[in-house]
Image (cartoon, rainbow, N blue to C red):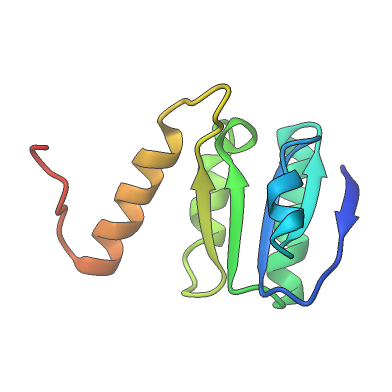
Length: 114
């Protein structure tokens, strides 16, 4: 459930846990705070359907259990849905997801073997 929304004219949005989006708000980015993965998926689907954003950042702690849904929504070129590592509870989900996006965009894994 989306409990807080700060609307600006940014084509970038952030979806994360309550209180985690303060820096994004300061940067003028639309912030949507969610308490669980179900709320995040609902908010993400709504933002994708609205078509007002080119990039949607999602906190990996909310996304880690619904990666299949995010991958399906991320099949279109825009909006680009990018997972961000949570600085408090980094899970490496964001890095793995970014690597998959890079392979899709470039056609090969430039990080392989590193």
